[in-house]
Image 1 (cartoon, helix red, strand yellow):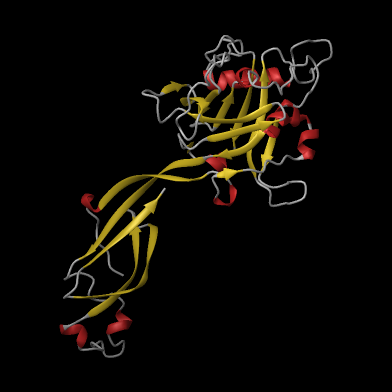
Image 2: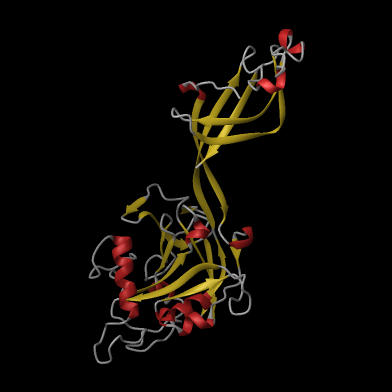
Length: 331
């Protein structure tokens, strides 16, 4: 084993943006949207509904892809916490949570989707599982197709490709949702309800303006004090969901150089020196030594081993050869 101190120019830091399909099984388009009947019957089912790629009630390999939820400033569409106290229900709690998270304001504030309903009283939301979108949603990769008994096909995407500026919120970037495909979404022609919603890629949330969707059909119910399963209604409208994730992977490159006069001798005395006579076992080690590099270890100033890089095959080294080994550390 031989040691050599690395110089500052031997280090290089690089960052690469990696884009991958968002859904399980390395696919970017999801067409099956299953729910868990067990979860829907629990109290949590009044707040949100997990959506899976396969049926979780029959297949243990089912994985959560995202969750659907419904928020209402009046608390409509879900059962009251306490009978007789109007407005206090899961849908109102959800509304306040999203206002706080996405707008950075208290629950008395409201969303503005740009239509006559300036202060939207209710919305639907899709919350992507963190394992699916990793660091962020890739802007321009979203296409959501809604279809139902009261809806014809609606294609929803963000406007990341055509907008000249990016809106920033307490939850990071925000893009407007409109009709179109893959980043060229525009406000639906003739719509009186404003845009279809917003994409918050940095927190993996899609807010849907149900007022605008109700311009085309009215599948959602705002019944006071009654649980009408609006999160499940939103799930049932999903016909195709295309999405990709994006993450920045930082890499630290370390260039380990073995010059022609370095690392040509073994420091293991049993390899080249006779233990009994103390003489050189092989004359080649006097005039023409050679060794084989098999691994590179990295130590700190306290001589503590921090990392080991293994070569795919031994690398021959002698006075006629120089070696440059590039070690890549991803983090």
